[in-house]
Structures are given as C-alpha cells and as structure tokens.
Length: 575
Ligand code: FES
Ligand code: MG
Image 1: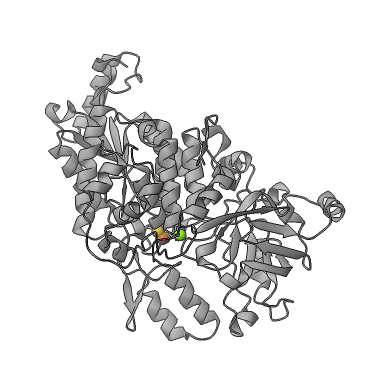
Image 2 (image 1 turned 30 degrees about the vertical axis):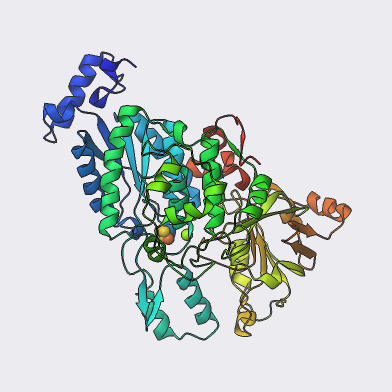
C-alpha cells in the first residue's frame, strides 16, 4: 500500500472503484459526526468496545474508552471506538466457548474492514481476551490488549467473598444443607460487588496475566482493579502506546513469537492458572502458525512451580496480587526461566520492563521460587488409552490423596443425563467411584462447556464428601477446584475412547506418572465401538452452529476453526 493511500482515513480505499471518490465519501460520512479535517488527517486508532447490558465484567468499558481516547489524543492521533459482540460467561447459551471463535472472526473482520492504523482491544471476561487476540493476530495490524480488570471483593457476614470460587463454595454448602435459603440469598448480592472480571485466578485473571507476559499488554496492565484509578491510567497508557506502535509498525507477529508464548506458558503454570488458559493459548499460538506441544508443556510444568497464592489453588484475590506488585513480581521470580529479550507493546523487552517495575517491599502473595506455593506447575498432562490425545488436570487445585486413584466408573452420557440423575437418591455411587461425563467436548455439547466440574452426588455431599475423581471431555471454570480430569482428547462425540466407558469399568488415574487408563480389553472396546453413534444436535443443519460443528478443532488444538489456522511452522514450548 502506498503512503498516500496507507494511513488514517486513507487506509484500504478500494470500495468505490476510484480511490479519490471513496475517500470523499468516507470523509463526508465521518464528518457527519463533527470531525475537522485536522482530526481526520491523523493516524486512526481503533478502540474495540465490548460493553453490553448483559456484561458486568465489561461495565467499566465506557470509562476505559474515555481514558484510551485521552491517551491517543495526547499522542497526536485520532481515536475511533467501534463495537463487536460481547460475551459474558453467564449469558452465553449454550456456552461462551461456543461463541469465542465468532467473536474472533468479528474482531478480525472489523479490524480489516475499517480504516485504522492500530487497535486497542478492550475486554476482560473469559473468552473475550483470547477471541480479541486471535482476531487481531490474524488481522495483523499493531494491536494492544487492555483488560477491564478484576472486580473488588465483597463482604458477607464478616467474610471476604468474590466471584466465583466463593459462588461455588457457598452453593456446595447450600446443597449439603449447611447454608439455608436466607443466607444463600444474602450472599448472592455480595459475590459480585461491582464492575470487573472475577477476582480469583479464574480464566479472566489467568488470561490477563499470560497476555501481559506475552507482551501484548501495557506493562503492569493485568492486575489493577476495574474501578481503580490505576486501571484508567493503564487505559490512557494503552492509547498512547497504540499510537507509537502504529508509527513503528509493531505488529503482533513481532511480539507473539514462540519465545513469547513460552513466557506466557510459564506464567500460566506459575499462577496456578485456569485450565482454559491452555486451550486459549493453543488457539492464539495457532493463529501465529505455532502448535502447542502438550508433552513439552508438561515437562515445563515439572520445572515451573506455582508461586501465586490466589483462589482457587490458594487463598487470596486479584486486588491482593495487584498490591503485591502484579505480574512483575511473578516475572521477577521466574526470571531464570524466561526469554527476557522478547519485545512487548511498549517497544522495550520483557526484561527491561521487569527491571523498570517497582519492587523491594515485602509481600506474601507471590512466593519465592525457593519456597513455592506448590512444587510443580498448576497443570499436568495425563495420557493413556482413555485419552490418547491427552487430558489436563489442575493438580494444584486437586486433593493430594486422589491424585493416584483407581475406581469404578459411574458414567453419564451427556450433561442432561447428569443433571437428571446425579442427585437421585437411588444412584448407585460411592465416594471411591470415578464420575465420567461423555459428550461435553467441542462437538459434544457443543462448545465444550464448563461442565467438567461435575457436582458431587447429593447423597454423598450430604455425607460430607467434598471431592471425587471426575473425568470428562469438557472444560472447567478456572474458579473451580477438585480432582478433575478435563479436555479428554479425542472427545467422545468424535468416537474417542471416552465414549466407550460403561458404568462399572475400572479406571486408573496416576497423576505423578501422568497416566489415565481404562482397564477394559481392546477386544471389548472394539465391540463397543461398533455401537458408537455421535450425538445429534437440533438446529445444526444451518448457520453458525453448522459452521462450528463442521470445523471446530479438538481441545489440544485450541478449539479454533480449522480454516482460520495457518499451516504450522513449529511448536511451543521448546525443551
Ligand atoms: Fe466474566 Fe468471570 S464471569 S470474568
Ligand atoms: Mg470463568
């Protein structure tokens, strides 16, 4: 693209045959909003607006847009906000993951379609950040992520509470009869006390931290609370950085390199981050032509311990991590394991950013590598005849005694089947059994919902059973904990071995040795395979659901659509 046709409002002028006329029309319409020629003659910084009346996690987006605009204008460019779809976890039927790739496509195409020299991506709720970066990576113009930031904690009868680890804890206690109807109604008003993303190490916090480590966020941008002045200052900085990035053509391919993804994976492990993080990082890396190597990730996990004491693996909340110095405090501890020469959106290296970040006070949220919160990384990858393509266990949030466990399978054939039977007093189940859920993977549900955190059957919960081994091809919320094996690949709807498990089969889980085995003979499995038929989903013959079912990749590939992923040019992490 020539200079003459390549910047600001002149970018990508092809619509009306003659470039002069196209620009003339563009200008006529945008002038309808009151801009001067001086404003329109500047670089344009797009700002992605993902506010919605359904999205409390993004309730502060209007304020952040104002602050980003200020940063853009102080740096001499023109800020132009534009909307994309908005995805909130609780308002995305059948599951937010079903919509992530739609948002990635929306983001990519709107960045391509409209004239902008760089883009600030504002989002925060779980699927939004990966969707935006997948889209921006494919669009290829300079992009910077700004998260909405974590919500503050609430207070319930003298106890600090926050979404959504405490949502689960209170609901489990309610199911067990320990919390009555009045109290559960009271706590419901305190769990999400204001704007922002879940304040524990759920998927939103995990993605914020790994994206800062990846270099795609303003330094210090992961942890400031949604309602804080720090959050607005980060927004202003992000606007100013976007202008610099446009001038220096600092495109995502210069930042999202294999080495940068290794830094992000190290942070995923060290934070005890959400298991969803591995799916999203696989998808983001996939957009850069990189394949995520689960076995190498597991080996990395033997070297990178969990340092961060946040729920659900630990005790604290994101506001506490922010007060402890945020990501820089974690990175400083991991320094020997990181690629410090990776470039970030600031134009400086990650190592330079770590050195520049404030430090030197005592804090108890991020442990030193010499005395970690958990000796290995938060996640382990298990394999075996039940999961030939691998499965994930969040070992830092599991019950140590269940990490090596042999038990009888109690199988639910779908989420609906589980919902119908799990609380049946006649369900034949004991605490030593292993709950198995089928057809909850990418194509199974569809959309790989967060159903992997299967409820403890009511009659066992009432007896005080807090954890059981649970196995599925589903995902789990990053805010949940338990001895839960997730992302079993290939999924049951694809005819994976998980589809062949029957109640009464014996399953062996051995996390220390990374094994997951079904002790059923190959001959018997072959017999069962003959009877396999994939689930049929109503409404799947048209529209987005059809596109999803026909093209979604398995969990180990990040559940992206096959046609959006360029050919692989390498794998991450390296050894
Ligand atoms: Fe949006 Fe938890 S629901 S971050
Ligand atoms: Mg979540």
